[in-house]
Length: 343
Image (cartoon, rainbow, N blue to C red; front, side):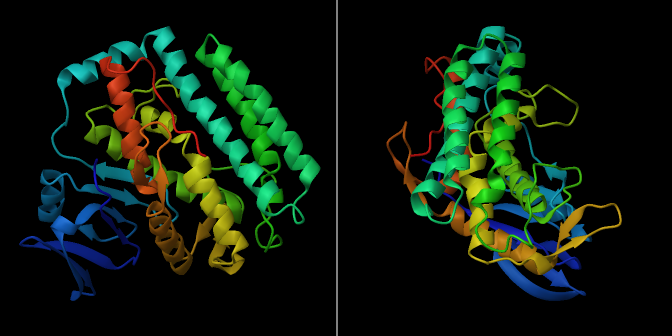
């Protein structure tokens, strides 16, 4: 099993990265600030403006170190990759099966079944752990709705029907998401999911975490030899990582939603760490973004027993694990794609 490596997040706007032998050098105002050996890194994620040297870009591509550039608010800009990895035959089979209605429905239904199940688990945990603080009847009604949606997902015979069922489930889930926010409710109001740009603090936080998860899933898919842009549920669009978006559906409640609620409810972040731009979008400040990234890395270190593999792994390896299982299914080694059901 792959080992979880370190991710270097560059959040200081004026930082510049360069290569010195086998070492990453972080410079600020032309002065050296930090040195890190390349072999300790799994990825580098940059929120800075000056960027990095071409030599370091080449070294990262050569050593399979993920390198991504995001805007300060978390919006994805670009990713640097090296030579295409994996068996050409696997990608050709992926392209063929993506056009097959039966395969597309099967994979999409698996991802959405796990997403709805895991969303229900988020609600059930709140009912179990905070019964006296939450609106029990409203949360229970939503949990029941999600449970009733699962059989319809399994019997759907086309992707459009699946998208409709997912949309209804997401509307119900996010309709009670504010009731999972137990503290700082004035600073973190939530009336529904919005994006591009996010118009409140909670949506800004969720969008940021979803971007991080999408980047990691896209890297995992490439590592196992799949094309992250050719998916089964999300429609193909130029530059859109459709397969990565398919695959994060089942992981969003576990890795992103729960972390967002924890950061707010434990008061690890404050409403003062968010600001409204002239466009109406909400942006995190540098200090808040660093706190979120630290919490993200800590979350990834939490160990679980994978329900299908029955192996103890860190949460941070879930993107790689699920990508590997999908590759095995597309190759014909598995009868169906086994999604991640959170226990």
